Length: 477
Ligand SMILES: *Cc1c(COP(=O)(O)O)cnc(C)c1O
View 1 (cartoon, rainbow, N blue to C red):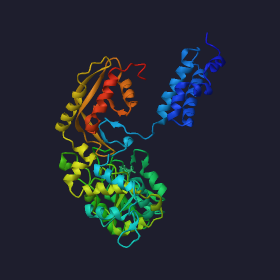
View 2: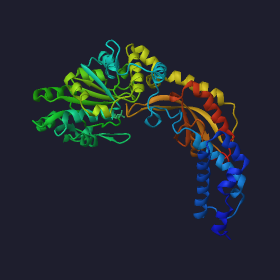
View 3: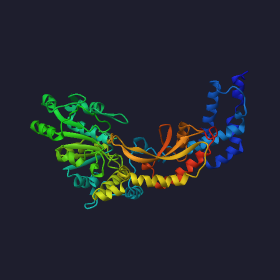
View 4: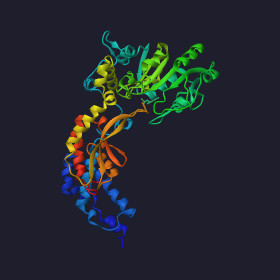
């Protein structure tokens, strides 16, 4: 017979009893009392819910003072950790939006530290001793690298598109192809951004084909902008047609309407030179005559989160003078990281060597093989009933909605389930300190060495060794 719920509730230790327990008393030395109380209340609430919902029906030993205290300590450890933490990206997705997109180059980190920890000339003109503009710090170098007439940066590319549309097309019309009405991860949708900006969207063409005459038919005195959106995270293949930038520009010129391109990733290097699929570059878009281009700082560029706006001087100036820039402005830490990343692009070989995103995307299969062998060496002698280990070939992804069709050949270390299932192992690794984020494929747990840094090998080896002896129950699995 199940005990009466009231009896079970009364069996739970009281808050005061828990606070008086020496185990918790020790924790009170190193943790604020408020946090300890929070942990106690969370654990007690959990028990009460379990009792109410009938998950606990007997007054078992788990309701005793010491077992409950231990649960409190575990919870305390969990809630005293920072929420934003380092994780190991073993997924093989280089620009992983959920894992923070790009890793910054070492040089950017160094500058980041000193600018963050001290005063700077962020908005101070050192020549004249007067107020300056934060944008000058990246404006010149952006112009130099892309040959754009003018440049401006905001918080991210979504903000760049929003402010560009708001400035140039509020209450007027923007023409865009139906094939380019994209949604990008994290709910950036062209039609929604358009609405927010106050611009009226005029859709032309069809999902797979849009012709120049489709644009010609709708362009008129109300048209403020022709917009081209790079369909970064998908590709329509087969019977398709898009109007090339150069054609759109000619049409725009005839009607005095500027053409803007949202490039999404916006790379400055031509990946086809490195054996990958061609991704449109920023320079190419400008050479073809785009009057304004926008792109992200933390996708293929490999820098911090930022939105970069380049193009015709009058358009960029109008955007800069928009009151909204104040709300969307880039902060100094982002700015210094962006400047340092851009400085690396002055020498493309240096960029390819020092910008982690570019390094990881362009890593050769041979070097990945060597890398995987080095990781394997650390764990191959291990015996486990939980899984067996193997090295196999597989593929990684660029991510961040860039080069969606690009398969990057890679080498993977995989755990083949024995006593533990692959799902159990994936969860266990994700709960590890630090969390190791793997990918499940063909019922195996995969560690793709492309996105793992060599300095993380020891940690991964330790995690795999701990997992090798983890008990399905006690290991929290
Ligand atoms: C990623 C992307 C965006 C959004 O950029 P964020 O920097 O994430 O704000 C907008 N447009 C396109 C085409 C994109 O690929």
